[in-house]
Image (cartoon, rainbow over all chains, first blue to last red):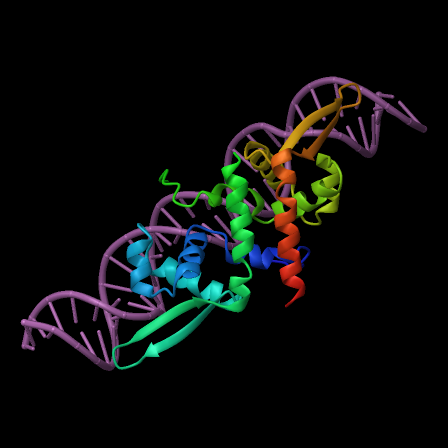
Length: 100
Length: 100
DNA sequence: TCAATTAGTCAGAAAAAGTTGACCAGGTAG
DNA sequence: CTACCTGGTCAACTTTTTCTGACTAATTGA
């Protein structure tokens, strides 16, 4: 509603929050991911939600979308530099969880 | 809907995500916070949302609620040990944002 | 006594997020 | 020609989250 960006971390936080984004992030951190492959890996996810999640993560600059080949259509999503810089944050989060 | 806790970070992530929780977290990290004081600081927030946010953060073990005094009713929310352990994660997040 | 503060709750409405199933276009494999 | 793969889009629906306004109950200060 408002444009008040009181908390600068909110955009970034939003780009890794939600039902599927954390998992997408973690999978993309391992290796490049593809649309239909993700759909199979994320049990219960649907095309639309996945498409939205990927778009938002791309817009927030966490993922890079690249066309690997056009003849057999092959698109890959990889973590951008900005996305990779988030990996240690996630690792820290995981370590915290182990303590509890 | 499902109980599948595929991503263990999701609960924690949820406890600091949403419209008001990141700000509440940051304010509580500075000093103990009070219900009505927060309501004034968080421009545009409403009682209900604030009450929900505080309850969820408390349930996730990030905030401790304590009654400072009963005669003039005075309740304080402070970061728990678990909550404090999240501070470096937020700091890392902020540093990332400065680079962009 | 009247007004304001404390910290909330409750029901209902509105907005945002997530799901469903149909559909599309191009390529490939039989 | 048929069927399945690629990577999506679209409209409509359900679920979750957030907001609104009324209301409670006790305490303080004038």
